[in-house]
Length: 358
Image 1 (cartoon, rainbow, N blue to C red):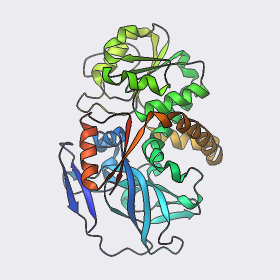
Image 2: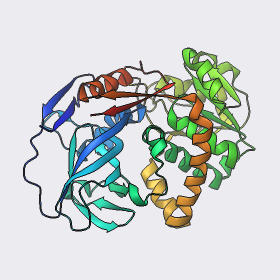
Image 3: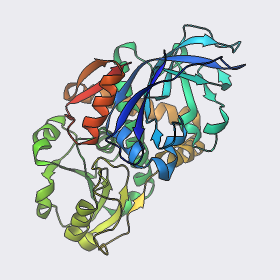
Image 4: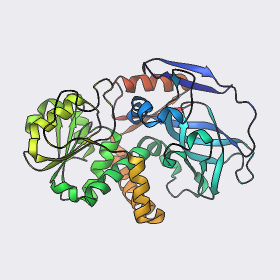
C-alpha cells in the first residue's frame, strides 16, 4: 500500500503516516516509485514558508495536514505514456512518500515536466524531472550528494551570480549565517572561485564552529555570540537562518557598512522572519527567491551555457565538500518522519547528510 508522511501545517512538529491508495493510473500518466530522497534544512524551509510560497500545493494533503516536498530519485513503476518506459529512473521534486503519479509533458530525452493542473501556478523549476539515462549531472556514485547538496548548491550558485552582476554592491566581505548549511557552503564555494576578491565570513552556532572551519569554505568563522568581531568594512549579508534577532544583531553591528542584506531560508524555526525587533539599521532585507533568479539566469545565458556553468562549479564543490559530510542512509517513512522532526528541532548533525529509502 502506498504511504505518505503528512505534517500538521499549523504545528510542524506533529506528523503522521497515512495510507494513500493509488487508484487507477490516468491516461498519459506515469507512476513513480520513490527510491530515495534527502532530508535537510531546506525541507524545513519548505514547511515554514509553505503557505507563503505555495510549497504545500505541490503534493496536496488533507485539511490541516500537508506533504513536505523532497528532492530525490524515483523509478517508473507503471506508465501510460508512450515515450516513458517502465524501469527508467528520474530525479526531481518528490513528496515524503512511497509513490507519486505525474503527467509528463514536454518530454525529451533529457527529461519532462509534470503537467498536472494543480502544479502549474508554481515555479516551473520545481516541476521538471531529469531522466537519468541522459542526464549530464547524474553520477551513480554521487546520488546521495546530489540529493543533499544539489538544489541547495544551485541556490548558492544563483546568489553568487546575482551578487557578482551587482558588483557585490561595493562590498569586500560576504557574511553567511547558518554557515554549516548546505546552501551557505555552496555559496561560499562558488564565491571562492568566481569572486576571489570577496572575503567569506561564516556565522554559526558555537557547537558548529569547528565543523565549519574544517570545511575550508570560509576565510573566517565566528560564533553567533561573537558578532563584535565582524570587521567594520563594506559587507553584504546573506541570511539562511530566518532568525530576526540574529539579523538585527548583524545590522546593528555593521550599521552603514552593510551594503545589502537578503534572506534565503529558515533553519531556526520560531525565531521569526523580518524585523520584529524594531527598525533595522542599514538596508532593508530582501527575500531571495531562487526559482525566479534561475528563470532569469537561464534566460540571460541560455539553457546550455547556464547548465555548463552550474556543472563546472558543482563538480568543483563536490570534490571539495566530499570529506566534510558523512551520508547516513535510513530505511522507511518512519525514519523520514523522525529525520524531519530532528531537523525541525535543530538537532540534526551538519556533518551528516540524511538519505531516506522509503
